[in-house]
Length: 329
Length: 262
Image (cartoon, rainbow over all chains, first blue to last red; front, side, top):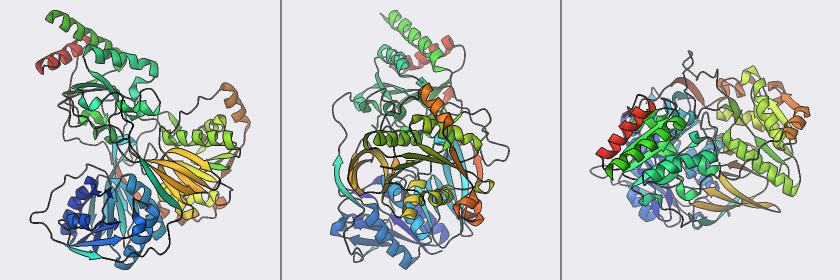
């Protein structure tokens, strides 16, 4: 096979972890398919970052341009289109992140390159690409074949492949390519970052978290979970839908779009366990999950699980804890 | 401000115990409740709010069989002015790319200042249709949109990055936004609204109306072909606590005690 492209993702001078995760998987793919592995980094003043990538690949393509301060998918698409058309890679890989979601589908459509997004597995058999993805918030997996083409594109889910730093480092060659960007990028322009709101409750420093999800059904029922949290001397946290609905403020949100937590106890109540949530809590010391769906993905990450209607079981748990505390006194 | 909102009729699966269909290529949908895709719900609400402020028309479009009309009715009840349903047996097996082609064939004939899609669909989670559609229409796009401020000829939008970080982007109009959940709080539909919506006409179109051929849609026009669907195997599996509610509660307390958590 030909060449595998991995597009590096970076922000404010830092290469993001997803890039090394993809590079690790790409090295394995390159070996099994006898392909060349090439990392691509685009940006303004990113030569130093290109050196980090050269530890993983034989070649690093570097394109620098004053116009690429911050990520702009329009600029990325122009440059990548040129590189892809010239070098005709067999596979292009990038993260299923705020970068890849913005860039990959449009680039794929423009060049008519078949695309599979949010992949958790991929393999080539006789030049045919098969991918594994998830459906229904991670409750079901799907194996799909990507239609045959000269070039394929995939976006990869975060935290899917563990990073393995090559030893010895690949010491790849950094090839700087003059920027093909002629005029200013006009369709959309980066203005500024907005940092997460500070203040509120710091759930990251809590020893015990009792976390509520969609299964609670109604804002009025959250007090039930809050009561249990208080009884346990724990802090109340939640999954994304609770914040989206405006039932709890965003400082309580656990997950990739909220906070990453590592308490001694994480009790997930009515949380199905979509990967975005799991990313934020899977390293907790002890995870207990209560969900009425026996196949909820959360049970694949919890130490203990209870398959039961939370409205029935929560009062029983609360009462037992109160009894236990009384005995101690 | 004329706004087109692309919506999808999907099964609600958050609380459901899913089973694989005997074909091995999809889930069993019998017994599941279908509704508007959650992300599309926020997109529709955002469109209606903009219309209420700026004037103009909101058009909801879906692709799907007869029963997906209930999702369009919901959009009409919420404040959409018109609705289009695209349906054809030959659309069967279409992936996100083929869906974008079908939507494009209709949207290119309509007037719009903005096009909204949900950031992704709850069923397949591709997050592909919006940007592909924008490429086909030749308009700029922004994904993961959490806030929109409109000015004449352009908009300032906030994109969600991660861990609460957002970026603000200025984008020319017309453009396409893929909307992230939490951008607003979708309204409840009044009985009056539902009644009024029942009287509105839903325009139905099929393959011949799109100008596309059989090879553009369905499996032939798709990038992805489903081989099999299966329940995921986890490396770890939680120890399930069983018994009466009291017995389970007792077991939980014992575990917490043994770890010094009570």
